[in-house]
Image (cartoon, rainbow, N blue to C red; front, side, top):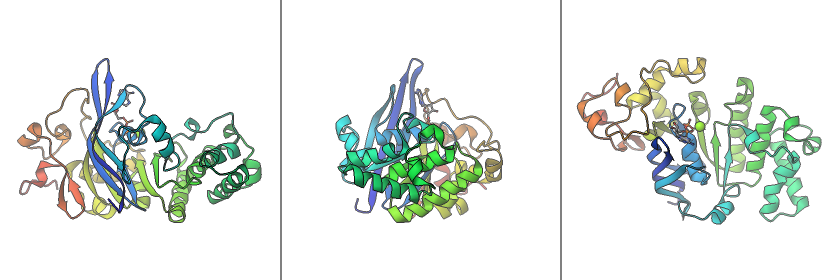
Length: 327
Ligand SMILES: Nc1ncnc2c1ncn2[C@@H]1O[C@H](COP(=O)(O)OP(=O)(O)O)[C@@H](O)[C@H]1O
Ligand SMILES: [Mg+2]
């Protein structure tokens, strides 16, 4: 546990709807080491945000954790009361959302909002304002003095996301969860934010859970990667192995589709078929219908996530079968 900041074990999250129970996150397991950037990647709807909200215990009705553990350092987050979670949220685990307007309050000034958390953490007003100024400078906000007095609607989208990053970083959380932090921004501004996050990463020494569908961001930031498909993690490896030695047929197809992904804004048009309906129980591998090397066993048995090489985990029966590899 020492080197691990977060250990997610067999986490399942269900949405109980009128039309049945949707298992959005299905026995997901992964670890994040201290100081590491772990990227969770996968197509839209595969359960990335739900996983993040589960960790933060911010799931909205009808979403609920139906099983598993979330160990943050030596604390189990599943089952903590809302009161206990308020001590962890923001101070120990910070989260940056896709749209900063969801978390910035329109009626308070930037300065107030960035220093508010610090005051909650016990800092006096002067110290909090000084640290807020310093962090806003760190995220490259110019003319900080007048920006402190601005309101969220008075600044650009890129600047709002910087403010959001400052708001999270100034409390120096041990873990930062960034859910598609640049998806809503222009491409040039995206690159700036990623560069900034990489710079700040060493200064603040945060561990980061980076959620994205963009392999460009994975290449620029991640140390290790977890690939999600229909609520399952299908492959975990260091970033080099994901790009050069992908083992799961889904990851391989994602890699083949890469030029298309960057051009078509994440639409994976080269993978035929559709993601299965998660409100119906699925017995075998959820990727079976789209898999080019699907075997009979794949329709019967869910493949477990197994280590195939040191630090490289894959959930695929083909990894077990001789010659069953996707070319
Ligand atoms: N409020 C909800 N009610 C029912 N199902 C939901 C709800 N929110 C999310 N889901 C289900 O959870 C799945 C995963 O969603 P999400 O975590 O947002 O995916 P991602 O972040 O990877 O795009 C969706 O495909 C959807 O089926
Ligand atoms: Mg999402």
